[in-house]
Length: 379
Image (tube, rainbow, N blue to C red; front, side):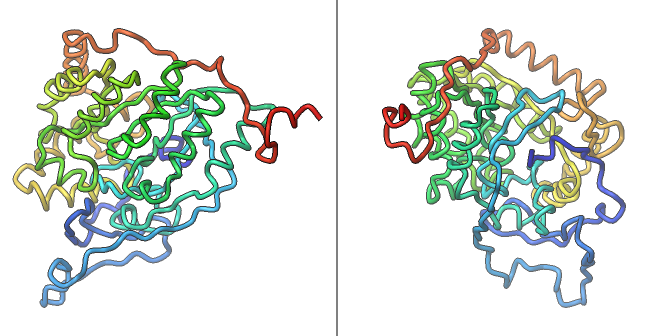
């Protein structure tokens, strides 16, 4: 699959530990554009005494650029033991939401691009996604299992409003009665409530909203182009009212930054109709570690050292540990405390009481695109 979840997320090497050149733009999360780790040349910025390292004053904000991904397959497979899905479909690479902490940022290095600003300004999209999905679902050897939609980068990020690729994928899911799971923080999912409600009638969908904080100022800095936290809760309530099962992910949990909000986020989500909840500890694979540290120094310099100290305590003394079973939760006393808090809050709010199993029995392979009607298949 094209996420960092199916390979080793080793810690950044010595050459990646340097603080990247800082660039702060309104509406963008990353504060740097470091070279990709697979590039043959690595640039090392030096100040010439004229403030040449500070690009904030005279550099225009970067605009979003679209790149076509001529994918040959759309369903990715995953066998990681600490991930609950085997199949995933990602219509986009890169994400305009610009979340400073995004674990998927390193995937842009495989494209020869930066995990920093390039990840949120150079968006790769798959125009043939729906066609590819139909082809793969029609394969006689295909075995129906729930598909995680947009699990690497958000399937309802802003550019989806123009391209409509996720909507086209949902239409194929509805036609074939294929089960899906969703995690999003995009307001555009409201557009597709009709399709999601259709799937929900046959137990074919579960939608999780990622809610990192209820603090609008923190959210604006952490996730500059994602929907506001209160808007996500409104959408959760709207989906619940339409009969779509919803849940909340308190993700990522960032020590000394948002960890105190766990119970408040779960309470707000339960009030909005969520029936399930979970959390994921901050993950800083590869380039994400120096990028997030630079973001902390820019926005929260007074607590940056404290945040990273706790991260290291949770990660065995490192910025990140990619070991299965540890990368999502961490280890040690703080990790156990977070786990207990989540368990107690869920019990009090009656979350995770129902273990939903998505329905795979309703699946019907798609008809070939050239067939105008079922009658034509008789000849």
